Image 1 (spheres, helix red, strand yellow):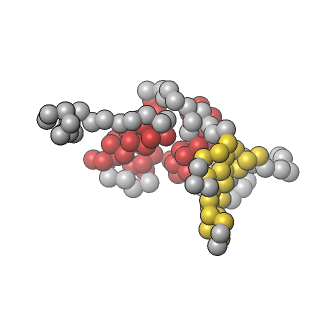
Image 2 (tube, rainbow, N blue to C red):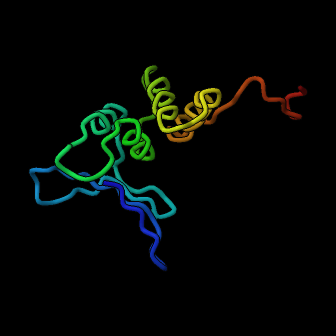
Length: 128
């Protein structure tokens, strides 16, 4: 469950893990200007995204679920399939095909706390 708080003086996002058979929720993370919580590995993120419960309200589409969960990604080393899966999710929800791969690369680099450098970028510091 993703809860966006936009009350006066209480802004942020809460990520809660629910289960239809349980009477409680578990807070995975929150975003109140800074990330706090444990986050998810790629395998955990995919497992949750690919397992919607038709018995509860909310996003059932796996691409939408993946994109809602993406900010929780804390794994520094991503499998090679991650980029292709993210590109597919972005295009399903309407991202232009010609920019989806660049967006996916940027998102994964940002989320895994790595810098992204495109070798075609010119820099006055590198002499090109």
